[in-house]
Image 1: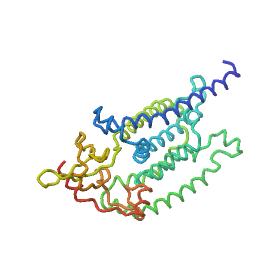
Image 2: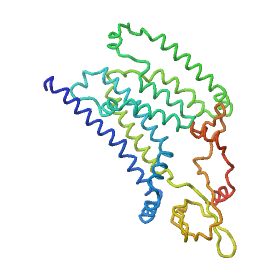
Image 3: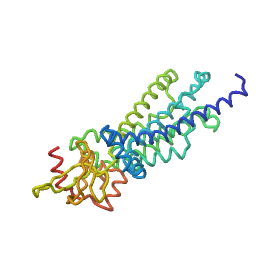
Length: 348
């Protein structure tokens, strides 16, 4: 291979990596959206076709964004963090990778535009639960490589090795003091009540941000490549499963009149409504058509995943709310759960 051919090969490699990356980013949500309808229908073909005929594509996209943005952004943040560490490690060990070319994750990382990284981090910031927001700190540090600069960069800048390290460590020390001071009441309350997982997830990630940057040892790059690619594959599989099994339709309880003057509560999701009947996808499976005139009332019910697990707050925000949810509750406070929801949940 001549020196003139190498830039062409590198450009071609970048183009292919960009096509692969954007194919995954654009194609995966479309495929998973279709799979969601199949899962929601319980795997029954006719029910799937009924859902496809009545679920508006805009509503499907809205449901995908509202329920999947947290999971998808989490997988993307993990992908960027692992790929960034791989990139600086491969660059640091360039001799061993000169012939075989960089790994797939490194090629992807080099073609991802900065605006896409920023948008993904912002989506994660506003959609993740406040409890898990500290995990963004090591991910951002790894992606941006805030604490590391290669020896060549330091020499180019005329800066001796470690020239700015004390200033950076001082800045991070001040940021850590501010972070732990902000969360001190929550950490103390969590430790007092024995919620050690909350203490761990809030206290440890900022410290990890100090050690996740920079290249790994040259001898462990191959191990990092294999484990990193496997981790990304597992994360994508878990993301696909979580998104495909997330509900598409709101959970409701419909109260209908039955012969004899009594009422029946049907828990499920309303698929379609017309002058003749209401089609309800029952929670236990199957579609039931109820005459429209027999419907007395309908109420929205939270799912089990929506019920809070912890009674911990961060300056007035519940730890299991996202920033969007917390701001939404400031505008419209949560209403009490209807008694019908509790009654139908207990008899399932």
